[in-house]
Length: 150
Image (tube, rainbow, N blue to C red; front, top):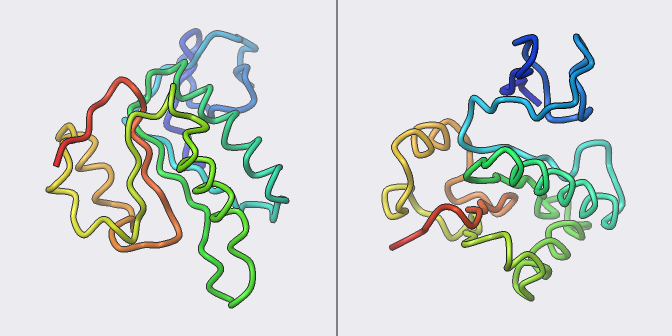
């Protein structure tokens, strides 16, 4: 993951994890320099449950940092097999597992363009760099402190 966060103590760039700064050891929350976090649930070939646990860790950190959106890469089973992470992740979304934390979600294959979404100019600009549009392998989550309108 690109280091889009700075230590609030020493100013060095760092990631979200580990939860302390590798330079100065500070355990304070870093400063976010992005409106969204991209999370790859397939990285390292986890089991379905490991991928969901991984996501929940990032969701907690995103809430703490008041990040507006999560772009979740879950794959879609293009090899003809698999797609288990995608199915489980979306099942949890559809059954409102994270309803108290996620305001809206949009599946990549259902998003034809970002102009129909009520997003900040900065978030729209950042997401335009991603391959989210028409992509069944990802889902965009807008956290509770942002609104989505069509």
